[in-house]
Length: 279
Image (tube, rainbow, N blue to C red):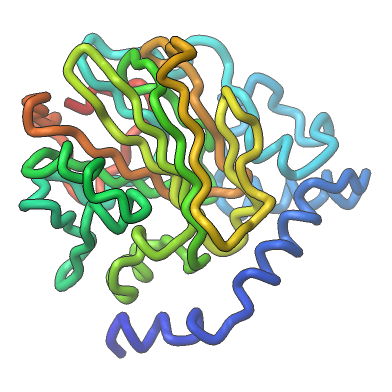
């Protein structure tokens, strides 16, 4: 069966309703039921609770608190590299942006303009540059960190679909990352601008940033934008910049002038950890 046929049921599912229901459950303290579900989830997905700052499942009053758990100090040391991997996860794809086309999977590409909410002028800054896409599975640590020190310029919330972002869906749904709901964050660094895009998915209750808090909900029909260029809001290399309340994918865009050269050990499908050398 082709990947497109395998993902066909996702077009039919009430993804928004399922996501809102999951979000309400994940945010609600349910005592013993919450603890029992967290224990099952950790066993089922192989979550390494020994890395958690608080390894006791019973200490989390909600599933969201467990899912966005902090790690023990020192378990993610920062590499001596100009660009750090911002998350734990699996490399979906990475490489050169061809014109403004970004490679998603065999037979699928999408444009930087579409990813960035239709802003063609912003997308031109990344033409012929580089990109990296990393998928966060349910077992992963779900806080997102800065790959480099940067000053926040803009944040854009782009409403969209809520398809799964699993590798199967990436192969089967055209333009997946430019179709799903997403939060686009634009930073200025010593090497020029870069974009860090948080992509939502089915069951992803919400996305939050360190400076704004929860961005969604509310889920709205129109693109929303915030400007920060006059606020000197700077985040250090390796600092937390956001989190997924239930997991998803990050996409990073770099301009050609940044001269990004990815870690030669990287390969599509490979596992990565926050703080490792990315480029």
